[in-house]
Image (cartoon, rainbow over all chains, first blue to last red; front, side, top):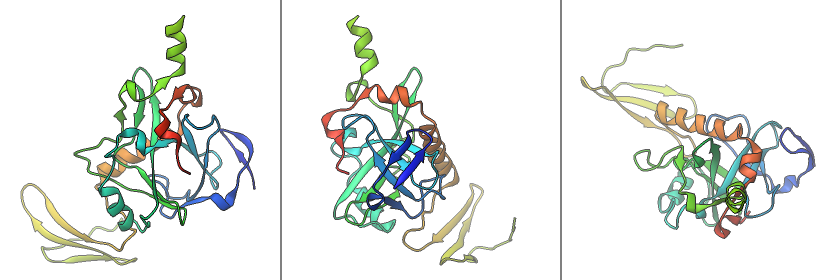
Amino acid sequence: MQLVSTRFGNIEVDDTKAIVFRQGLIGFPDARRYVLLYPNGRGKVAWLQSLEVTGLAFPVVDGAMLGNDYPQPTAARLANEAGIGSTDLAILVVVAVQKGVGLIANMLAPLVIDLETRSGAQIVLDPQKYSASAQLAPNAYASANATANAAQ
Amino acid sequence: MLILQRRVGERIVLSGGIEITVTGITKRGVRLAVNAPRGVAVLRGEVHDAIADANGRAADSEGDELDSIVLPAAAGGSL
């Protein structure tokens, strides 16, 4: 289908690959169907683009980059409680750039997606352990701008 | 807004199979037991708001800044 995304313009998306968040994301209950876009290829931040609210897209990274034990073992249990199967579970983390800080990640509330049914939920981990705006260690990723500046 | 007075042991029943029971009242606060079906999230208000704010800030991100970030290979994604 054709989608006119505010952020990415007129794009062709495969809506058979839509991921359904039955409860939406927290704070965004009315946007339930998304597609995952890699406008800059793999190895860059991906975007979860809403199919219903064309102006809404969340930048996400694979939870695997946040450490081997993140956010296991609770993710599978919380996914089940949220009504998501956990046999083939993908974990995405919503990120943002904060000026002067760098990449921050919502480690408190990752997105779990059952790859078999393509249904997802935003689960909430222990607030004593994880922050909704966790600063990522600078060595966890690289900024192409920073590298370019350093090379000059 | 509906405001109700409840005593310890008394319940409030919401549609969708959600029940809230007052289990204790002390100087420090009110203890509530929440019963909700699978798939219904139950969150403390301030936790909900912190996550909603983080989601909102992420959705408002400047694309250019995020595009400059190079992720490790593990972050390639399986979707």
